[in-house]
Image 1 (cartoon, helix red, strand yellow):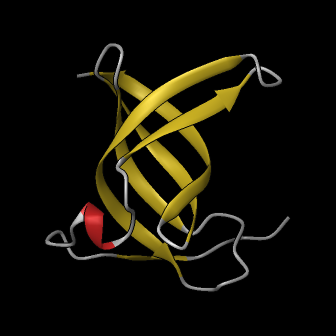
Image 2: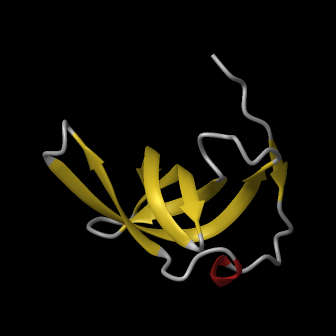
Image 3: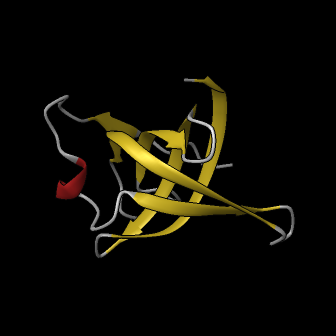
Length: 90
């Protein structure tokens, strides 16, 4: 298993500096469950370009404002894949 390393981004970094659209869909359950999230703040960026995930972000689930942390794969300012760990309700 690879241990990916991330560098902390400035708290003044803006989401639109990294992605064109702050909303993305996480697909789980063998492609059966689609959940819409919105990025609150991108917190970290991968140190190496070969990392599976390129960014870490604080996110909110749109349907009920549950808070979470997302691992994102961003290519050309587009979120191609995401894995979210929900930590609680807002």
